[in-house]
Length: 201
Picture (cartoon, rainbow, N blue to C red):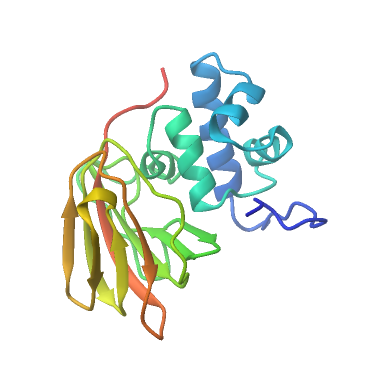
């Protein structure tokens, strides 16, 4: 699956600074590790022109591509997303229903439910894809709770599990995982992941 539609010009919403902030975060970490854009693109299995557009905020990676970029930089997708939202109060973060950082992708959308750089990061996934994406794998443990709809979770050697509303699932760090929609309507899934302080520098 390509990262952008063939022939489509890079699109950026002028009212949304997420693309610029995320691209800057990726560029900052890449430079701190002494990597060239070509080297990072090769590690993440992306084209260098596309990665250049991502770093300049002219294109947004899919969640799969963002995951590969994060792994290539020695971090996680939530850590990258947590680093681009404004820092909130030191002891609490309030995110309203129409707020949070949202990333649209082929499989639906992902919204952060805490701002700043928290010790754990809850994400709201809206699941619409019926085919399994590539596996995700990262050092942090993860907890999954189905708010609405039905999904199937593939944990590799740990098997596949079908979950409905109010079902939950926990898996340790480094367990490969991916999920897809199995119901008739889009599913809403809460995913909570521990984060680590891996800020560049």
